Image 1 (cartoon, rainbow, N blue to C red):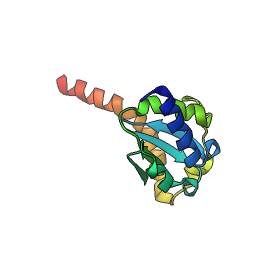
Image 2 (cartoon, one colour; image 1 turned 45 degrees about the vertical axis):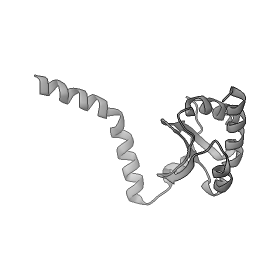
Image 3 (tube, rainbow, N blue to C red; image 1 turned 90 degrees about the vertical axis):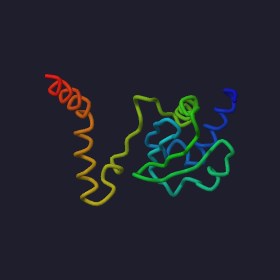
Image 4 (tube, helix red, strand yellow; image 1 turned 180 degrees about the vertical axis):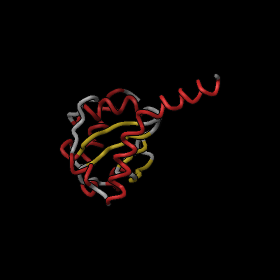
Amino acid sequence: MGKNSYTQLASDLVRLVGGGDNISSVTNCMTRLRFVLKDENAAKTDEIKANKEVKGVIQQGGQYQIIIGTHVNAVIDDVRKEAGITEGDEKQDMKLLKDGNLFDRIFKIISGCIMPMIGVMVASGMIKGLL
């Protein structure tokens, strides 16, 4: 698939998730585009699933995930350009931090504090085990 196909796919996906104004952030994993949307109801899930390049759509954990395939790294650059989002300067909406019940908000805060330290804790545990 050529570069033009990714540009068209990115344009279609941004339009179908509600446009660049509806996207707070977009990241990717091995096969999925992971959107954090301001309004998930604005996304046209059936039309996204109908796209021949899309393998599926999953909504979980406050993310709107579109399964693309292993070429997702090439697609995400075009999605960011189309949405007007740069990798280090993603739009953050404080409302997203306030969503959910009290337990969810506390868990988000605790996991946000602990996640950066996991690598250090694993490394120090391995060093202690060797000593």
